[in-house]
Image 1 (cartoon, rainbow, N blue to C red):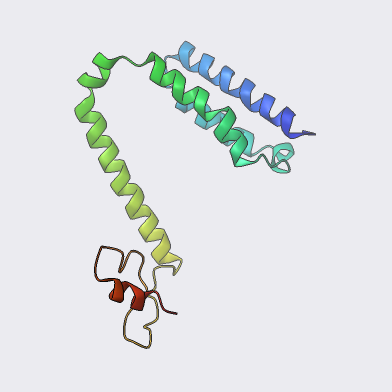
Image 2 (image 1 turned 180 degrees about the vertical axis):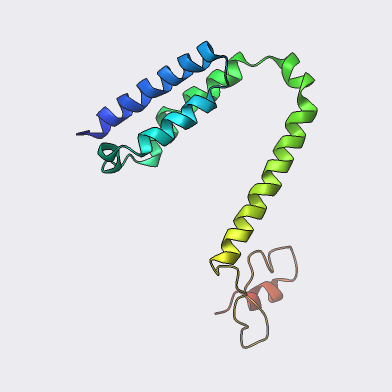
Length: 141
């Protein structure tokens, strides 16, 4: 691949082919997209090309999201609401647990060193509407 434009065209064609294959195989569209992405990731020619994330965010993601939102049935969503809510909750909890386990395994979950005044620097501390003097003490280096 010589340029990012060729890569964008190749990714667009891959998305179209995968969506057509999903319809023909009566499978969910993400399945062939995931398999195609995995296969394309192993091609040596594509490893050297780097596409900015903004290009994917602005070119491909809106088309995929808007099409699914446009063709979704409200009856089907209402019928499957319980499953959708349960699965999304379970997947969020599993993702958070996986991130926590990974961070702990990599040593990123260590506690911050105590400060001279005995307080710790923790995100969100002193921002909960407490006294302004207390918030000022927490923001000192």
